Image 1 (cartoon, each protein chain N blue to C red):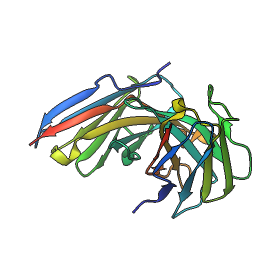
Image 2 (image 1 turned 90 degrees about the vertical axis):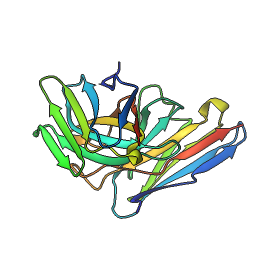
Image 3 (image 1 turned 90 degrees about the horizontal axis):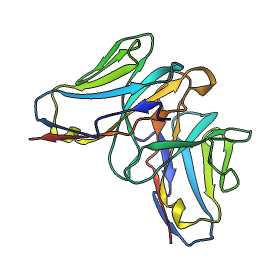
Length: 115
Length: 114
């Protein structure tokens, strides 16, 4: 069964609104989780590192004010896409690992469509 | 700057034969490598990994080979099955505090014909 779970799997929102995606580690605690984005026919690109109890660190070119990350507990990280635009439509995926050297698990992914 | 490259966008193999997927990397800090299988609109599924202290890791039908001097790794699937048809991504991670932060290749579409 899944050890990292995302919700929702699919979401459609209107331009200008915000949408929240949750990522949960089910069988372990994760002080660090990672958020990726995949555009159609492209690879997965790391967006940010979510750190429990502290600020997320963002990759170059990713707007921190647009993609708000909150890692309030050891099993939950959330990604909020604020003021969504159609170009934000993408597949968002999170990952987590029980610890250094352990398998890195991915969530099922969340399809965001902004209309 | 593509630090992890999969130069073959696609590979077609007959059922029962060997599938060999290749991956090259440029960053010498990478010390942990993984292969994932992915279907459209789903998250990647972990297949097999290898640490830089090894040159081979085997798990059932899947074997990963690492050539550090050439900065090259490959995934062998033997025997290939139609259910193996998917997109395969190789990924790399540096150690220490960067563990878990993956850089992915572009992916290779594997098609296994019955």
